[in-house]
Length: 314
Ligand code: ATP
Ligand code: MG
Image (tube, rainbow, N blue to C red; front, side):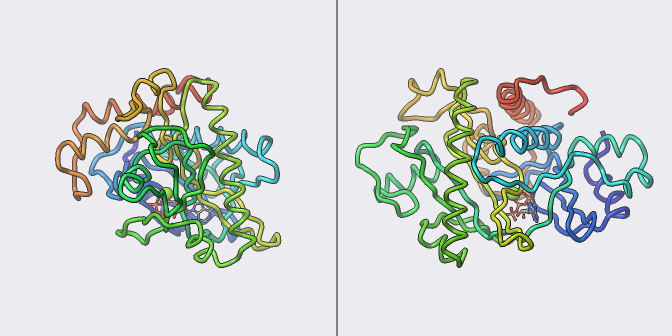
C-alpha cells in the first residue's frame, strides 16, 4: 500500500487540501464538495501515534458509509453530508492506479458545510471521563445523577454530554449541555443537535445490541447547511471504533465495576496509560498492540455490517 505521506503529496497536487486533522485530510473537489480521506493514523488522548494501524482508514470509511446509508431511514429528519464513495474525475486522470485504489478505499465525497463547533457526545453507559467526573462530584458534564452508580452501568436514559472542539494541539473539554447551547449560539439549532444526537445513538445502540455489542458512548459532529435554512446535518465519520466505545454484550455484566473489554481504541489507551505514555508525543506503538487494535476494529466492523472486511480494504 502506498504510504499515507506519499498519497498526501500526490493527491495534494491534484486537488487542493483544505484541512488536515489528526486522522483525516480534506480536499476541495469544488465549492460545495469535499473529498474526505481517512488515513491509517491513530490518535489517543488527542495525540497522534508515530505509526498507524494498517487498513484502518479503509475500515473507518466503509463503516461510516454503512451508517450513512442506514441511519437516514431510521432517524426522522436526518440528513448527512455523504454524497458518494467514488473519486472525482480530476483525480482519475492524474494519479497512478495503485495510488488511486488506495485513496478510493479511504475516501468519500461529502457536502462542504459550516462545522458546528462542538463534539456532540452521547453516553448510554457511565465510563471514561464521565465516570471520573461522577466519582468526584456525582455529576456527568455537570448533570446530577443518582448516587450509587457503578462503572459501566447503563444510564436510565442516554445523555447528551457535549465537549468543546479544541483547536489543533489543544484538548477537548467536557462541558454542560447548557454551555454547549451557548457555544452553538442558537437555541433551535442546539435543540436539533441534541435531538438528532440522542435519536441516532438510540437507533445505533439497538442495531449494535442485535449483534452483541453494547454501544457505551459515541461522538458525532454536525454541520449547517446554510443554503437550506440552516438545516443541521450529520458530518465527519460516524459510529466507528475511533469515535465510539463498543463492548461485547456477553461479558458486560460480569465486568461491571471495572474495565470492559472492547472493540475500539480502549486497548491502545490502556497500553499507553499502563506504560506511562498517556498524552506523550512521538510514541511508536509496538507491533503486537498494532495488530490487536486492528483485530478489535475488524471485529466491530464485521459484527455491525455483517460483511467480511475484504483483503482489499487493507
Ligand atoms: P477536530 O478536533 O477538528 O475534529 P480531528 O483531528 O478530529 O480534529 P479529523 O477527524 O482528522 O480532525 O478531520 C476531520 C475534520 O473535518 C474535522 O475538523 C471535522 O470537523 C471536519 N469535517 C467533517 N465533515 C465536514 C464537512 N462535511 N464539511 C466541513 N468540514 C468537515
Ligand atoms: Mg475528528
